[in-house]
Image (cartoon, rainbow, N blue to C red; front, side, top):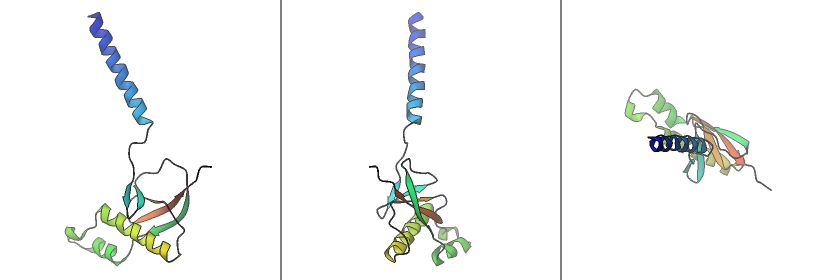
Length: 119
């Protein structure tokens, strides 16, 4: 009985330690779309600078939002892909500085960021 209690206590301690160590480490990596990391409802753990903003309120997005047909509704992948494409277009036109990633909550607008370089 004493051995069983000791084993049970060791198991509980191991489980608690595992939970604490997992909580301190990053749990996910961002999805890349066209080579750009996209953080949806999350933020990177690395330090960064904001270099600009972008939104996707183009004709396709507005039509999908106004449509009553649920098959026309854009999903988060469509929204974030449009967001990245719009940011890359602005970058090519010189209207946006070079960026490493985009942070977005809903997929219809985002913040373009550049990671700080460690010296």
